[in-house]
Length: 464
Ligand code: ARG
Image (cartoon, rainbow, N blue to C red):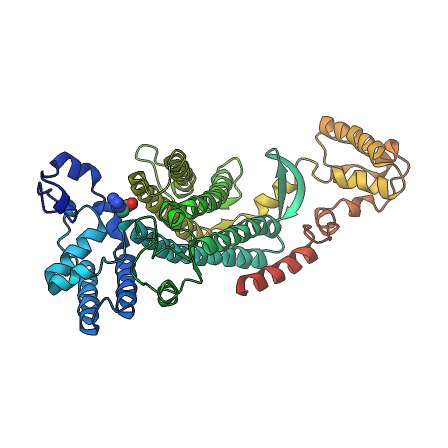
C-alpha cells in the first residue's frame, strides 16, 4: 500500500497544511484493524438505523447507506476493496468508500458518532465472537480428554510430585486434571464475556451525543444486554481486553503445561507416548530424530500471549481519561494472542487424539520406585499405629528395599514382620497397584470408581 501524501482528511477543514507522509505512515492502523471490517459494518448499519429512527435519516437514505455498506463488505471479502493507508483506519476507509458509492448522504452516517465509541464497539463485537470461537475448541479438547480417559480406564501410571514418581494413578485421572483446568478456562471466558457484552455506542467522542439517539434500540439490534453507563469510561475502557488476555494467558499456560508433559512423555527417558508421525518433525542432520516441535511451539507461543497481556497493561497504566491514541496499540497484541491461542488449541487437540499411550511402559514406571510405600504406612495406621510412626517404620523398610534393589511386593511376610508385627499376610494384596489406586475412592480420588463418576460428571458439564 502506498501512502498518498496529503490526502484530504475528514478533519481537513481545520487544517491549512497537509499531513506529513511520516505521520500518515506512523499513525495508520489499516494494515491491522481491517480485521474488524465486519464488525465495523455491523455497527454502522445499526447506527444508521438508529439515526433513521431519530428522524436524522430519510428511509431512502437509510436504504442507500445499508446497501452501500453491504456492498463494501462484499468488496472486502472478494479482496477488491481499495484500502488506503492515508485514510488511517478501517472506519475512515469504509466511510470514504461509502461516500464514493452512495454520494453525500454517506456523510450522514457519522452523525452522533465518534471513532472513539466506534472502535470501542468494533472491539467488543469482535471479542464477543472470538470468545465463543475459543470456548468451542476448548470444549472439543475436553471431549477428547474424556473420551481418552474412558477408553483407557485400565492404564495405571506413576503420578508425580517434584517430577519424582509419587503414587500410582490412573492415566484417566491424570488426563481429567486437564479437563478441570480447561473447565475453569471456559468459566473465566464466560465471565469476561459479561463485561465485553456492553454497548459503548452513543458515548460519542467522550461526553455522549446531543442528537436524540435511542441507545436501547441500538443495543437490541446488536444484541447487547447492557449499555455502558458513563461515556467517558466507555471510550477509554479496555479492561475487557485485559481480562480477556488474562483469561487466555491462563488457558495458554494450561496448554503449555500439557505440551511440556507431552514433550517429556515422548522422550526415550519416559517413553510413555508415541507421537503420530504426522504431528512430529525430523532433524535435517540426525536421521534418527523424531521431535515434538508442535508441543514445543505451543509452549513457546505462551510467551507471546503473556506478552500481549503485559503490553495491554503497560499501554493503559499512564493514560488520563478518556480516549488517547495510545489505545490504537491494543489491537496487534490482542489479535496476535487470539491467533496463537486458537491455533494452539486446534493443533494440540488434533495431536492428542492421535497419540499412542505405551501402556506397558506406563505400568513398568508405576511399578518401579516403591510408589506403594504410602499405602504400606496406611496399612499400619489402619492397624492402630500412629501415622508418623508408621511412616518411619516404612521408611526403614524402603531403605532396606533400596539397598537390596527390591520392590515392596518382593518382600516376604517374615521380612515385613521384622519391621513391624502388625504386618499380616494380607499385606501383599494390599500393596498391589490396583489396590493402591482403588483405595482412593473419595470424590476427586484416582480410584476407578471415582474416575468413572468423574467421567460421567464431566460429560454432563460438557453439554450444559
Ligand atoms: N484507530 C483508532 C483506534 O484504533 C480509532 C479511534 C481514533 N480516534 C481518534 N480520535 N483518533 O483507537
